[in-house]
Length: 135
Image (tube, rainbow, N blue to C red; front, side, top):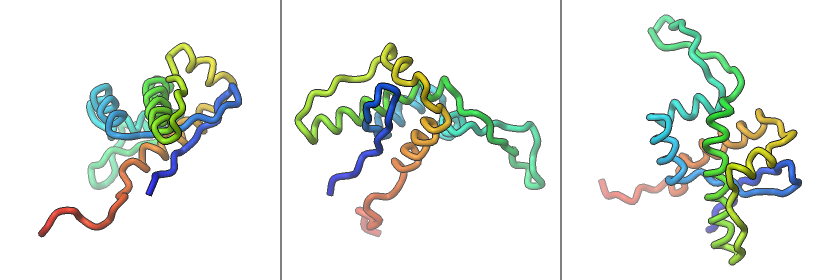
């Protein structure tokens, strides 16, 4: 069964496929050290400097990191484009850093970050709940 891709509409009116896969996760881990740090940046979670009764950090939601969006969006878009090209036989070109500024003009960055975060979470969903390993 083919996995359905998430799509994102950008300022040129075009709809672009978005895919978070191992290549994106590897790049994010390399850039941020831990995927949990990348996720917090993307979703806008910031430490308050306070701890709860159990000694755990308390977070508050702020704006997403534009740096995290600018880092991961082209990776996710280009992975989606590659997958869509393989499926359809098309040759849609990759998004460049120069394209990104133009494509995000007038776009709600909170919505973009939210869609990216949903795709990030989706890549951890179990596709096949039955284990492939014998006990």
